[in-house]
Length: 201
Picture 1 (cartoon, rainbow, N blue to C red):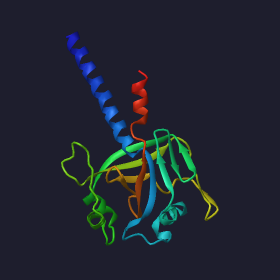
Picture 2: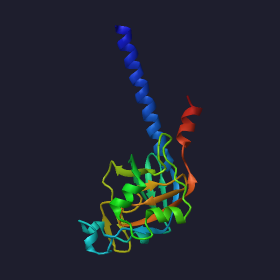
Picture 3: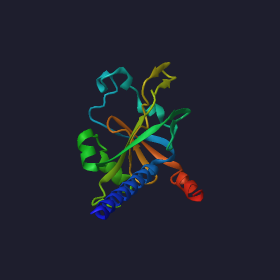
Picture 4: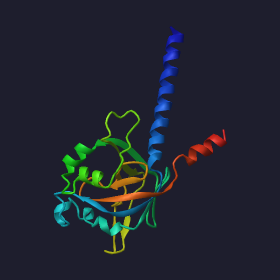
């Protein structure tokens, strides 16, 4: 009986460790540098006025961030020159259908954007449909503030890059509703820290 209990405990521990490694590996899919290229989608409810958010801090034009570089790492997140530490990556799944339905993108909608740009969707290995996308929401362990030079004002949030959906290894959409930006990978940092751990057992 004791051997049976011990065996079950070891099995559960191994499954937990493997699951944690898989999750960390999937988080690493986003690691690296990305360039914000252009705005590609807009929700029907997006007006560009105070009707867009509950708080004044939610009101900004995402296109102001086109041309900036994003960098994601396990211990920091950077947008332009602003660096934020202790990011917590929350990984989930979203389908093209649910995203389009919830955000009500105008034409070109999400389906047409994918088709017209020849986007090849990369899903999970265990995904049964190409429509499953990897969504990342980033939270921080510290009080995050963003200084908007254009409006000479400090905001208590990071407006771009903390909610994103990975379409494949090189293309990512920033935002979930409103005006959506496209970012493309310029440098890949996935797996670097794992390689270091392997080299130094």
